[in-house]
Image: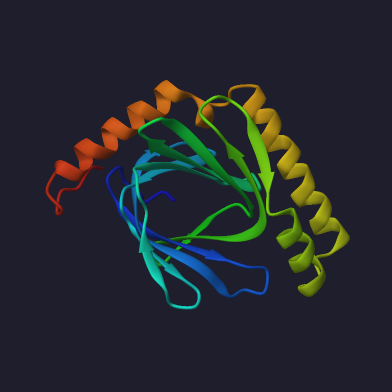
Length: 184
């Protein structure tokens, strides 16, 4: 993490518990480097699914990856407001210019009006049984979901509209810079 610089471009790889790649994003631009997390941005980035199909994201996103928390947060900057898609997942690592984490199915979706919904409970139960998640892992995952909901209710930084808009402006300005610039 020491060698990362604002403006660096990485890829993202999401794995499942069985260590198989689930999904990959072609680009994540470093916007901020904090002690406990890194903020990235992307827009209309290529996404490759495990079975080989591809698609592109539809809007700019500001992404928060945490060093010691079992979730990550994607702020989707849509025309009608900010939607948050929060993955229950392992803390990230960076290897070979790639952000890597294991996704544990449960997601928290937060809408611009403030309501939220827990998603993919059935998928979580299915994978928990199929991949033999331990009781300890089940506790960690459920605690992470509770912590994430509390962070949202307490207006943690990743849910701050103005901060996400600042990061979006930074992302857009970095994209205008030369591809070969070094922002260290």
